Length: 138
Image 1 (cartoon, rainbow, N blue to C red):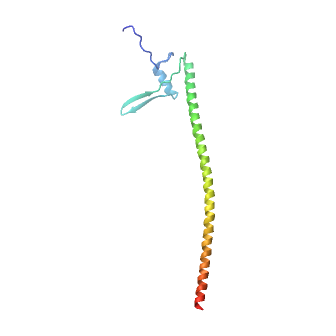
Image 2 (cartoon, rainbow, N blue to C red):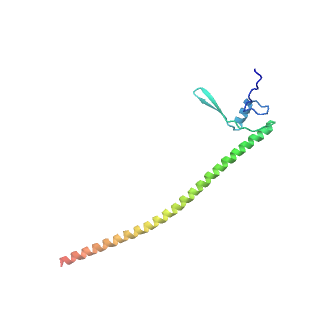
Image 3 (cartoon, one colour):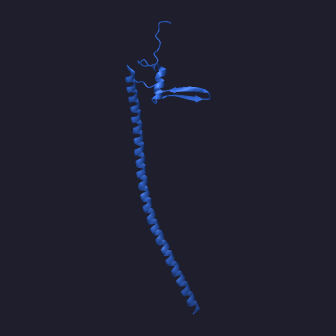
């Protein structure tokens, strides 16, 4: 060795918990350490969350819970935004449905009036046809 200091492990904190135990604890707590097996070999994907300086495991647990709480809060905010967007969309669709229903009622009224007018024209034609045939026979 040439007297140089070794670089500190970025995953290690000032607690006495070894990195393996810390990863196990994160996985047990629903943390973000995950192993993925592909074709017989496994690749570990790990996200490092810097908790800051902690002096004991209780503080570490508190910090981890704070991080989880923050993430849950962000997820809740995101869900509320999506829920609000869906509510707005539902209101627009309800308004559109009401407009379409009103248009269909008007169209149906005009169609019924048109149908009645066609029946009247047919009756008049039949009446004029029979009276015209009657005049020819005289």
